[in-house]
Image 1: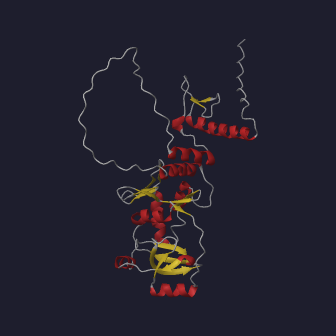
Image 2: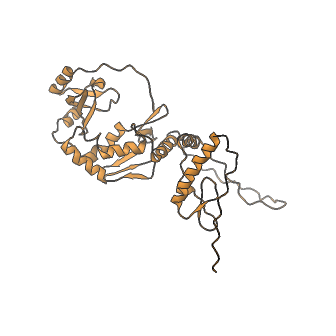
Image 3: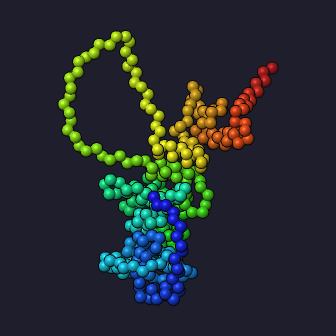
Length: 319
């Protein structure tokens, strides 16, 4: 994760300079994202269009354009006339574009390195199967979004990415952009914060197994307690951070946490006396119960008991 740092805005490249860069095919890069680099192809309305070595067009403002030098392999890849299909460079594009801000910390798509040299990702794209899924949530993007993106890239390759349904859906799931946070985005941010702050334990060095020791059997006097002690409560750092963020952004009620009474009906997660036949109805009612409880706490009446539910009227006797 990277911290937001206030920096003076760089000077913008003039339109004449940008035109000269595009005419000679200058090698440029993005100041904020150095991995976004390539050959300048055009500019319009204060934005530079760059063809990257991965085979797609990227756009960034003229205020972030800086000169760079591509390697021979990168320059040869940019000189190809045909563009690569989206499924081949989709993972690299997601690693560059996804930035989830939680508090004052920004988490990129590859938010934490592993011991074997790889990185843990939020969104994973498989080029062979065209599957795009979230590694933190049980969520997968419908495959037609990738097909729609490839069809739009053939018509307008420079602007198809930012206006595609694929990118808009991923932004909504991760909680990016100017739109409000949905329940799905809150759940993703809670799991991201918990996974990013989980300490990674180093692998213990291999040690030789000690020889087993022979112990004398001890005779116990009195009844023996064979029941195992309950495990201690989990108070690890990731659980505490996840609970804290969930309290700030709204509690998440999942179906696996629901309880049933002796009649097989789902009980209210907030603790009221109502029961439900379906889990979805219990979750919807439990969310409303939690909101009502918070309102009563703000008004100072949290200690007051909840009113008892009304009893159904007795059916009239058949005359």
